[in-house]
Image (cartoon, rainbow, N blue to C red; front, side, top):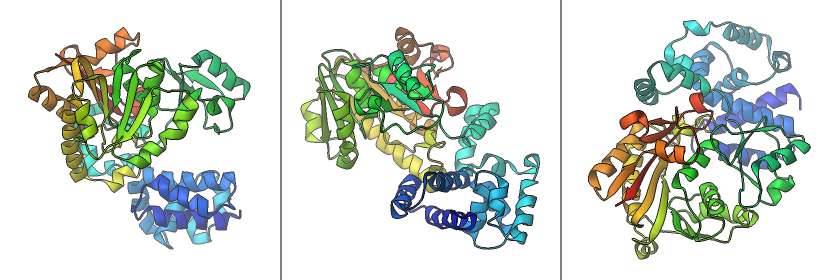
Length: 422
């Protein structure tokens, strides 16, 4: 495609994305379906431009007014990846001079907001939490997330799968924390691999794998994944249970559970029972009250721990969404807790980095439910043979909660707390 046509396509797609009417990944996917004539390179350029603009939106909007032409075009020029000489072929002389001026801006002379590119409502609580680590986190959010795989331990060994991927020309390394994970060197297509087709691998961030590990689901138990979604943790739990016992995958969205079906078929698991529920007080939940050994609640949240993958979330949400989520999270956790029998384990988790969705929910639950004794996450990790240092925070010894950060651990941002029912 000619540079001018490609830049115009980037501009047109950005115009749709910046309406923020739908999640960016959905808008981009729809655009690609409607423009099937695009080759792999053009598709990559379109996606990279969009995500570059979303990651550095405040900076680019600060620079854009000094240029000319439609706003979406100016932003697309600033976010366009690759060699400048290719882009230059799409620009007029005035645009070339303007772009050179933008490229010459000294980052050290910018305002903080134009350097970190986070809305004020999000930047402030992150600064309060992280102090001097705020800037390493902000910088890490400009980078795309690595591609992590979880090996299906029911059917395969990690080193065997790593060797198999290597023979296919795909480099990987064991994830540093999860014993199930492989981190790929790039973003290869996986769909045609035999390892994928037979269910030996699933795409799953290492942090999400650790959440499943914290439940320590065992053979023959009754286990519930309370907010299962597309079932990433469900599949990990089923494999950990060695395809025994009974594993319920509950979610209020039948559509999300539909995404579990092909993954479940590949996994060779027969102990998983997906079920759509109307709400957290559904009759199916009431019938299981007091009968379940282990429950994980990966609660609906702001998703702000996934900003490397979904940078639009910081622009599509505000503090009111976080407060609404916190109310919902507390209600879901209370309902899920009723499922547990004495001695059962409860894990609450989010992919948020904000205390309002994490520590605040866990501490309120502990204060209101004397029948549930907090279990330090650090101790669980050590029992699993995972070095807990640097992964935990809060409580005596700083081991009460799991706290994962993109800049520290190269995972998405995750939180988890655990309890045992007395």
